[in-house]
Amino acid sequence: MNKPLTGKVALVTGGSRGLGAATVRLLAEQGADVAFTYVSSEKQAQAVVDEVRNGGAKVAAFKSDQADVSQAPALIDDVVAHFGGLDILVNNAAISVSGTVDDPDADTAALDRMHATNYLGVIAIIRAASRVLREGGRVITVSSGFGTRVGVPGVADYSATKAGVVQYTMGAARDLGSRAITANVVEAGLMKGGMETPNPETLKALLSSLSLQRIGHPDEIAAAIAFLASPAASYITGAVLDAHGGYNA
Ligand SMILES: NC(=O)c1ccc[n+]([C@@H]2O[C@H](COP(=O)([O-])OP(=O)(O)OC[C@H]3O[C@@H](n4cnc5c(N)ncnc54)[C@H](OP(=O)(O)O)[C@@H]3O)[C@@H](O)[C@H]2O)c1
Image (cartoon, rainbow, N blue to C red; front, side, top):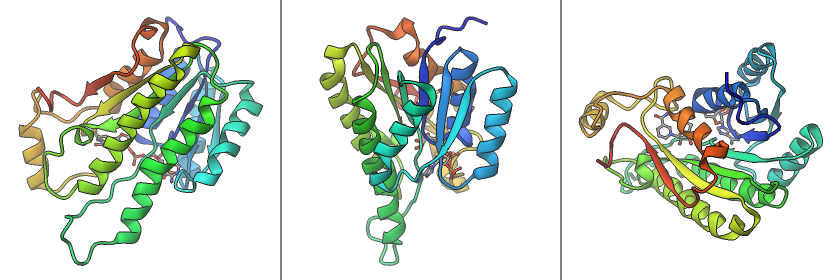
């Protein structure tokens, strides 16, 4: 297999399962040394490490709570100490908490944790990583179709976190371009085995709004991330790559 990422060090946040695990596997197959974070799934994280290591790649898992912004600088220091540098940051880790804006029983603590994880935590990691990213580096932020177009009720908070990190990543593209570092967004769509299975009514509405009329596989979204990480994407920055089956078509 072609290994365009040989010699690169990648950090994928939330690599213990779902899209993050698919991205860890693909970047490692393409030659990168890969660090990834998780917060609670110790066994799943170890299983990803074992699988990728058996494939011959260098990989390490770091337990780090993205909702606690104070942990971001130490995470980046640990990754650099382990692998000797950092070239590719994939901001994937996120949680989903739904509910309408007028719900009197809304679990505001859970919603606040989502804002901390999906928005403030991503910003803290971009800040810490951008200080050490090497020339030619990559920042790739995973957003959602909801980051651009909300589309269904009950996802105002989630969508706001995803829209926020899109704009932060655009700002990073402007700030880091002089160091030949690109920053782009992949807007993911509904995925098999992902964070939340919508209720049947929402699922039906979402599927009928997709050009491809089907749920995606994490490998299909990881492929978009790997492209933006590759040397072939050297002149692409400040872009949003939609990998959600045509939600905006
Ligand atoms: N699934 C979908 O249908 C869909 C649709 C559009 C966009 N997306 C986006 O795609 C990305 C991946 O989604 P997914 O469905 O693959 O998610 P997932 O299966 O729920 O996995 C989430 C990952 O993030 C980690 N994580 C969660 N909270 C964390 C925290 N506080 N600190 C560190 N790591 C944390 C989890 O670690 P633990 O295992 O330790 O909890 C896990 O590795 C997200 O950015 C999501 O917004 C997903």
